[in-house]
Image (cartoon, rainbow, N blue to C red; front, top):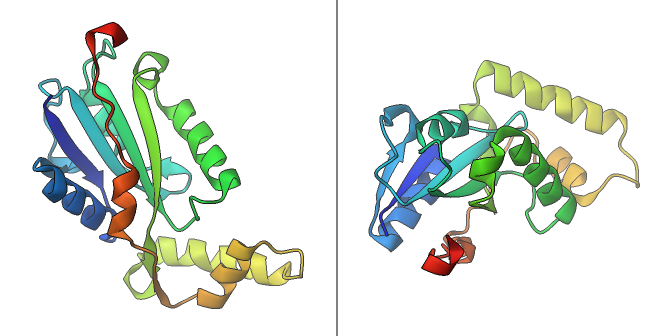
Length: 181
């Protein structure tokens, strides 16, 4: 089975996960911007930062897959939301289902990893978006806030990392057997 790790990373967390995964598996990791062709791979593992509800770089990766959907696609999202919270993962899975064509989705696995944020490294647009999110959360701050909202308020404008390379162990690529075809 030929595999490649592709990544879409804005601030480095997703890149670090993809490169570590590739190192562990003895495969190549490449940024999505450098992709030219993916049809020569049986399995494509796309690590993508979560940005405004989308998976960074996934659109280009999808365009470069075999149109028949015969390849195995593994999507690994990296974001601040806690993947142990089923509301977060349900939302992400639904957003991905809306982005991935059905014939490809049928042969796709989805995983979620927790990333980090360094407000000093954010672009002006992303910093402003986080500011608006923070202001809205503070305005509605109450005991009814969920744990993640309270965590976001407490860590606003700081550097926070939830990166844990041990969580890469959950990414188990299912080997296609002739019975699966």
